[in-house]
Image (cartoon, rainbow, N blue to C red; front, side):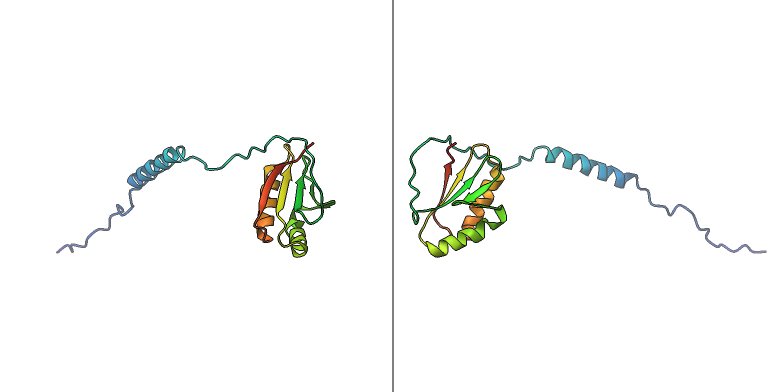
Length: 136
């Protein structure tokens, strides 16, 4: 009797994951080490100290946005929401196209409101923007 030479299937066809895990751990360590050296970029806004002075409130001179310490925003005598700042400035600029926009912020006001107000004024078409302290 002749035995047939049939190749036996081996169960060694499994992939060894050890080298792949080593590479993944090395990459993880690399990213953790390099991420700790990244510096967040940003800027601090230091509002100038308020000085009590006489201001002329003549109509037609400028558009004034006042940001109070508790987060209230006033354009002229009207209290407005931050989302309505752009629409109010557009309306006032339609009446006074050359009027500069002055944003007055209280020392305790959140910087977020100051930046959003400046962005809204810029989007409303204001080209002359100023930031001033709000006298207590």
